[in-house]
Structure formats: structure tokens, C-alpha cells
Image (cartoon, rainbow, N blue to C red; front, side):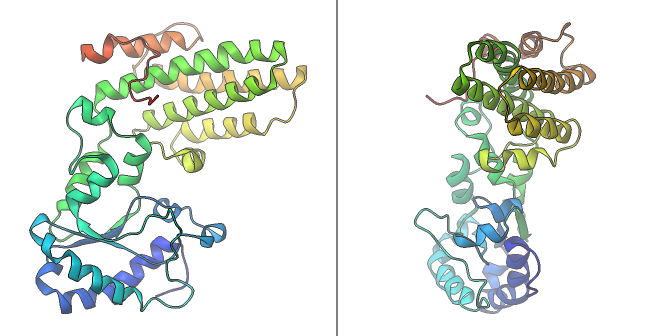
Length: 320
């Protein structure tokens, strides 16, 4: 196992070089069906782990996903995995904190149920609405090292198809309305009042909505806040362009008139990029620069009345 690369690459190398031969020798029949990989919670599953990541929940590890018919083998395979991981070279063994997620041995259905509440990809509207988007991002990140039966990868491919069109349109409309309310409308009002906490909140909400819209346009799930903006910079245009502008917005230290002018220009530049993309794709024909028009245009395209009849700004995914 090479010492180069993050925990994901190290885990793949260890599995292929050490664990898989042992699995095939000790559990030859189960090995014909079991999938393995590193997917889910943790910076390493997004490929974002670094030296800072090594202080907790970091190191070589892998999941073993078995079909339902092999559920009875889970205790034995778990014990086998414990013995195998004892062979990980010193310095690369996975640490585990109190709240860390530990890759284990589980059925394919149980793994997906633990992340998205379903043993398969969501099918009904209620199932989609129940899943936090960050969990969908975790369900398709990382790598599948092997999947001879194809069961695990079949669910993963369905999830990678992203949201059904009506849900996608609804989520986009919410982003547009949030961008209009925060960056285009309330940023100026908060600045004029000198309300600094509200001003910071407005720019944060605008930035999150713009980032989310960029992910939706790319048909990618937005990771949770810690990694969302790093992942945004890796999206195709206009995603990485939006990321650069949002970085400038977040880095602005000033609160004077010149800073207000700079921030307003950046906010409008973000809106220009995303508005142009909505028009280019034929998703919105709204005139003018105010994003309320885009939000309403997107809502009007929704086929499902249960979503179309909701106010454009109402987010059925939001909890609380």
C-alpha cells in the first residue's frame, strides 16, 4: 500500500491488496456477491481530507455491503473485518471519535436506509421530501471498490440521476426567491440601517442560495455546509465562476460606502451569471434582473400541482 494519497486512495489500495484476497479465501461464496467501498460521511469520502483531517475519524477503512440473503453472515464478516483492519500499517489505522461514523458490514438496503431513509432510491414525492440533500450527496460520493452482483451500484446510479424534474424546478424556484429577497432587496436595506449582524446574515443566505442554485443547475447534490463551497468551485461553469464571486463577498472586510458598492456589484454579477444560465437553458424567460421573475417562471413550469400551487418561495424541504 502506497503512502501517497488521501484516506480514500489508501483504503482502496489496502482493500485490493490485502482485504480482498483474504475475503475470497475465507468467504468464497460471499465474496462473489459482496460489494465494498468507502462512501458516506467523512471528508475522505469527498476526497477533501488533509493533514487537519487526521486528528479524528481518519484512516484506512471500508464498507462491506452484502445482499439480504447474506444478512446472517454479517456477524462473521464483521469479525473478519476487525482482524483484517488490525493489519493496517501503523499511522494509517482509522481513529474513531465519540460521534464518528464507522464503516461496517451491512446489507445494501440497510446502508441506503441509514442515509436516505429508503433501501432504494426515493420514488414518491414524500420520500424525496424526507431526505436532506446533504445525505443524498453522501450517498453518491466516495468510491465503490468492487460490486460483482451490481446491487449496490444500481441504487447509486438511480440516485446519481438527481431529482425528478418537478422537484428540481421547485428547488430552483426557492433559490431564486431567496436570492431576490436577501441579496437584491434586503442587502441594501440592512446596509442603510447599519445593521451589521443582519447584513452578515443576508450575505450568508444569499451565498447559500446562489451556491445551491449552481448545484441544481449542474444536477449535483450540494454537500453539507463545511464542504459546499469547496465543491462549488469544482462545478462546471457557471458554478466555479459563482464560487469565485462568493469568495469575494465572504472576504469583504469593509462596511463603508465603498464596500457596499463592491458587494452590490458582486451580488449582481452572481445574479447575472445564474440568470443568463437559466435563460440559456430555456428554464426562464423572465425579463429584467430581479430574481423574483425567475422564481415565478420556474414555478410555472412545474407539472405536479402539489408543488406548483405552493408559493414560489416556500421550501417543502425545509425543517422547522
